[in-house]
Image (cartoon, rainbow, N blue to C red; front, side, top):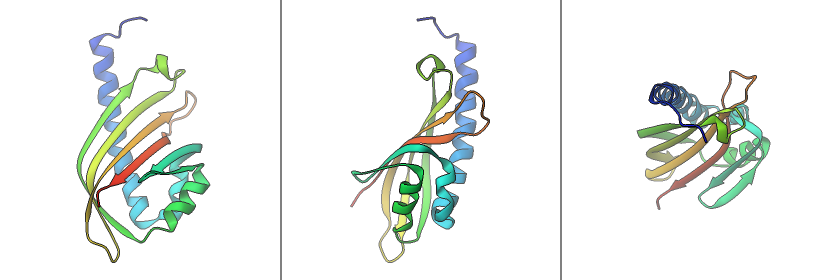
Amino acid sequence: MAAVSSVTFKAAADSACQAGEAFHKIYFETFDKKRNKIDTLYHDTSTMVWNGHPVRGSKEITAFLEHLPTSETTLENLMCQPVIDTFTEGQTTVLVTIFGHIKFNGHKEKPFTANFTLARPVQSKVFKIFSNYFRYQE
């Protein structure tokens, strides 16, 4: 396996941070206010695990999320890192980890953690969610 130069990795890390920053704003705005449109952020074959409940496919994920009460999310921490493209068949891939609080209508606020794997296919300019794990604390 070829070594990655520190300059190349720094550029990839900076790019991953920019993508993660832009992504989290779009995702949680859509999640909180336009949940019926959230399927546009997922790849057709994406997987999501919501508090241990697995869901597969963008339409199925949207249907699952639409049954949740309305929400308000507050993000406390965002971490992003690139995945070396030799492991992802040339796709630009970013891992995003988010810590925050979520308040569902009629319930008290809860801390949560969300992990996303975002990928941008070689011929595309748009990142899509390939996997998403969400867990809040009771």
